[in-house]
Image 1 (tube, rainbow, N blue to C red):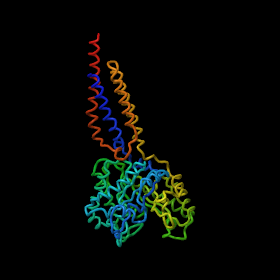
Image 2: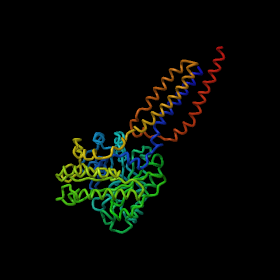
Image 3: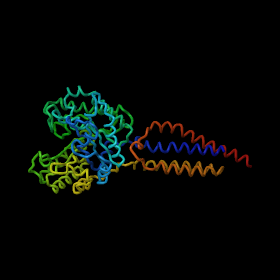
Image 4: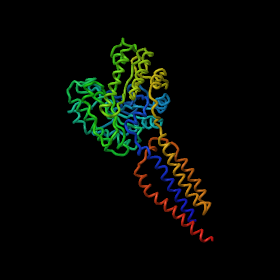
Length: 478
């Protein structure tokens, strides 16, 4: 009876420790910024959706805002379709302005909706970038922007900005490293100046201040945010020489967990009808502009000492699909040569003047454009729970070997242990199954440490107890 009790105790400890070890591996081995970027292949933006806004929206509800710019409510089928087309990264732009108070507290319904889309994306096996979007950008008229690249404005909204990122970071602090945070989208100065600031150096100082506040705020929330890869953008996410020279990478409490982001619709005259509506043919001028862009981004990355990604790029539909395909293929291929990862801007508009390559109602894609993106991108690493699966299987094998030793000793005393050992093997096999969602993938490593400290002595004591019981039992039978 005593031997049976000891065996059950051993199995009980293993049942507790194995799943906890499986769930915390991701947190213990967080990818560095460079590893994260290397794992990305090509990405897709869920544009004009959760980033929609408008002071004219009378019924400010999550659904009303999400669909305000003409796109349907996002569904899990849409997200699954993104993954199925070969993308392994999704950027989820979010405008928070109409759902936050002056202290940055977020309406629970809006936060729940954002979290739902993030969860779907992670469950479908995508790397996710979550940001603060049109809270930045052009201001005035019907805009909801409250973050401006201006030191006076920064000082007045600093507490709200920190409050907002505290709310977001706490909501997702237990999520694993497949989720990245982007501090802000495109900060513009008081003059709404694109490409480079025209209001003086204070605009650049403000951008650097927002970046530092973002990193400090997220890190302070702890959990997996302590090592989460964080993304900071240059002024209006520009690659202009003055912008690059003025950008200062934030100080961080950990090494190798910062990424810089730029946006590049290059050359603008070709990419947008607003640039030059007659320039619709992909030619050597486009190639030269792309070549120069990628060389510039690569040099900028070297000077910062962190990877730089292109968080937005694209070319409008101007009834020139073959040229769009040629442009996109060349752009992604050239970026790949420098190790630069690109994320396509999709605003859901597939007709003239739009960047959409997915019909979100019919769930059909512009396959030529998808091929131009996916076929020319690096292979990357699947953003699934596979890394956990591989490690946990190794851990399980080691644990099974330990169980086998215990079983071999115990079987000499009582056949009851054989049955409990079979039970433990079943538990081990089931616990190495891939986790079903992002919540389950994340655990608290402190719990594991405590249980490990307590559990190992108990297992060893149990083994020793079995050994001495076996010896005493052996003496009695002689």
